[in-house]
Structure formats: C-alpha cells, structure tokens
Amino acid sequence: MSVRVLKPGLLTTVQDGGRPGHAALGIGRAGAMDVPAWRLANALVGNTQGEAALEITLLGPTLRFERAAVIALAGAAIAAELDGRPLPGWTRCRVPAGAVLRLGGFARGCRAWLAIRGGFALPPVLGSRSTDLHAGLGPFGGRPLQAGDELPVAEAEPLPDDAVQVAHWQLDPRPWSDDGVPLALLPGSHHDALDTASHRALFDPAGFIVSKDANRTASRLDGARLRLHAPLELVSEAVLPGTVQLPPSGQPIALLAEAPVTGGYPRIGQVAAVDLPRLAQRRPGDAVCFRPCSPDEAGQRLAARQRRLARLLAAIAQRLHGNA
Amino acid sequence: MTPPGIRCETIAEDALLLRFGERIDAAVSAKVLAAAARLRQALPQLECVPAYASLLLRFDPAAWHGHEQVQAAVHATLEATDAADIASRLVEIPVCYGGDFGPDLDALAAHAGLDAAATIALHVAGDYRVAMLGFAPGFPYLLGLDERLAMPRRADPRQRVPTGSVAIGGNQTGIYPAELPGGWHLMGRTPLRLFDANAASPALLQAGDRVRFRAIDADTFHRLARNAPA
Image (tube, rainbow over all chains, first blue to last red; front, side, top):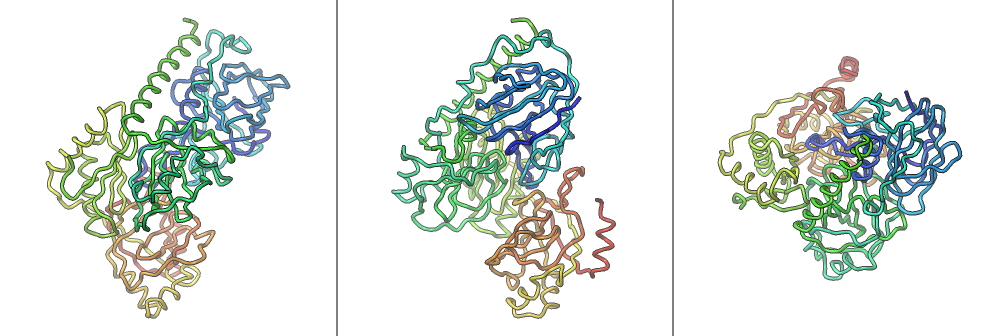
C-alpha cells in the first residue's frame, strides 16, 4: 500500500510531532508547523499515535493512491480535487484505488496537512518521521518530496464507516484557523535593551509584514527597523520555536518549528506557543503584529487550548467508532 | 529563589533559562555543565540544553504547577549537591592539517606570526573541552583555543565547508560534522564521523567532553576515512 508523488508541489514534507529531547546534541525538534491542525487531520482518519502526515506549503502536490485509503485535510483551506471532483477539508474521505488527488493553492493561509489512515510508514530517525530540512534529517534524507517518491502507508484496522465516500459531518475549522489577530508576545531577555521608539514599534498595530525570506526555520519580519540602546555582546545560547531575535539589520526574525537549537542574536520576545500555529499560517506579504503578554496569560491560554483539543479529539474518535 | 550567581528567566511557557555569566569562559562553562549534570540526574523529566554561559531547561507544562514549581525543584537540586567536577571523557581527534585539508592554515599562521608547523603544534598542544553543541547536529564548540590562534571570521563565508573540517572563528574553535556553509578558517580535517543519526549515540562529542587533536598525514587520513563506519 503506497502513495505515489506525481508532482511534489512547492514544499511538501513528511511531518509528525517532531523529535524532542535531542537539543543538547544540536538536533532541533522540527515537526508540524501547526500541531493542532496536524493532530486533527490524524484524528479524522482514526490515527491516534502521532502518525506522520504530509505538510503542504503554498501549492499542494498531486498524488496517486495505489490502493484505497482514508484521508483527511486540515489546516488552511486548500483547493483539492479527487479525480476531478472537489474534495472537502476538515472531514474524512475515502479514496478509491488508483485515484489521483490534485492539491492546489490557498486563498488564505499557507499550510495544510494531509493525514492518511495508518500514517506514512517511513523509517523514523531519532524516534521521529519529521523532516528537518536544515539538518537533513528524517524521511528521504531530510529533503522535501520529489516527483516519483513512493510513500508507504501502514496497515490499520478498518472502521465502521470506511465505505462512506465522504463523512456526513465536518469539523468547524474556525477555532483552529488564523484569524489575523495580534500575536501574543512574551518579553524576551533583551527586550529592555530596545530603545523607546523600537519598543513602541514592536507593539505598533501597524506591525510587520512577513518577508519573502520565510521558511520552516523562521519568518523574517519587514517593517520598522528596531534598534537597541547600545550594542550587546552576546554569546550563543539556546533558542526555541517562537523566539524573536533581533539581528544587526534591525529586522526581527521569529523562529518557527525548525528553529536551530542555539543562536547568538538578542532575544526581544517569545511568541506565545498558543499563537505559533497562527504565525505558521502567515505567508510572505501577510501582516504580523504583536501585543504584550505575560507568561501566566500565555500558559493559561495554552492549557485552555489543550483541553479544547483533547475534548475534540475524543469526540472525533467516538464518532469514527460509531458511538456518536 | 535561585542560587547565588545564577539568574533564572522565564523564556517560554515550557522553558526556563539559567544564566551563569555573560561570556565565553572556561570557569563559567564548567558551572553550566556541572549544573546540567546534576539536573539531568535529579530531574530527568527536564530537557537540559547547555550553552557557553547558560542552561535551557524545557519541561512539560502539563506535568508541573507553573514555572515556580520547576524553579523551586531546580533550586533545591542545585543547592543540595556540591559543585563536584563533572565526569568527562577524553576523545582524541586525528586531524590532517593544511593543504587541501586545511586551506586557511597559512592565513592562520601568518595571523599568529608563526610558521605552519608551529601553528599546528600550538593547536595540537591544546587541552580542549566541549562547551556546547549547536549550529548543526553534532557541531561542537570547543573551549581551550590558544589565544595566539584566534582570528576574526572570514569576510566571505564559504558556501560549502567540507565534512570534518576543524576550524577557527574568532576565539572559538569547532568541527563541521557535515558539509555546511561557514565563515570560520579551516585548519585541517578529521576523518572521524562526528554525527550519525542512526547510531546509538548520534554525536561523537558531547558537552563536557575533553578533546585533544593529533596530527596525521594524508595517507592516515584516507585509511581512517575508509575504516570509519559509513
């Protein structure tokens, strides 16, 4: 059982929850850029073990399913056609053997996840099937998918409504979508080193624009050039997804899922974890603005979202097993 | 809340950063690594990421009652145990210096005001310690470079530095575990494999390891490279 890549799309990678725990060896976590969307896509096809899915960026791939499969799309709304007929997102769909799925572009947002029942059965590297493009780790030697790639799919138990083409129910994507609101920013170690004008500019509602220089590692933000009172002499220290660094150019850089493990620029803030999926959906040209946020508020919002996600995952599992 | 000499910052919902100093310094690094060793033993549920002068602690926010509880546990651990010396391995790194293996050796020698042989001798005589890994999987930043070998980074970074290159950037020295872009001066190359994701222990060197370099000739380099696990 496998899926053949006919066209790879702009940047399609295999991703799961990433490989935590190896940062001391210089190995980042990588993993899906929008973890709730990846988990929900998996849940919709009955996967519960953090299975690997495809992360699709800006322009989707064309895939041929060698055998019948059950798939789901989540994340930003993406144009999708299965053998020429539109395929809805945020629900579970049956794909017949030999079918061709053409994924197109996004009206808003820039990333979606395609999960498949059983998950993509590629060999894990350091416990994860996540592709780390920068480090060259993961499936296919850490590179994006190419035409001709074959994606093996793990066998999985059938579920009661497997014969149904498209489930008669659908998740509401709105709570999990980017609403364009300001991103919560925790203060960074060197936040107080910003000069007064830069401090104001960082939280200006006019904000920043995601530059063309955006990828899985980081989004560079165009806008006001930020400056420090005086230059800081810093030595490299650990950084995280969400860390906002200020290089000498004055253009802030927000690190994303594939953040390196160390960096040496001043850290002026940390995007609240609960808002990282929003940032991951902003494409070059999209606006980004920040609002100040305390660690307590960020922690509470994160915990609340985790509870909401857990409830939804449980409800989906119940429905798939016919107990709804 | 925090032992003297250490500043503790809340840097993310799931992370604290302990700061032990501000610069690259062997004594500060030793404190960082000793704290990391004690915390790994006492609180294995924390992920410890040492850097030159700081230590990142990452935790599962669902398993703790806020940063305060983590900070209290960290404090208790660092207070309760003596700052004993960390156990460290000694790893010998064979290096073929100069020529195609180290195209910047002559520039480094000229900068130091030495000839190539004396420059190599100075590098080989050093007693190094891995302060941290970063930049790329398995890339070690070493302390212990003789000041005379320090040299500002290249104005024009190379797009491709060969795997195994032993290099100097400012007062830092390191080894490229893979072919990567880089602005450091290349002194030589080791045939040893510094990183293998599929090995039981993926990185040859870990923070705290002591390192010594040994000069080898090109024949030995090629022989060792052939024998290195693919």
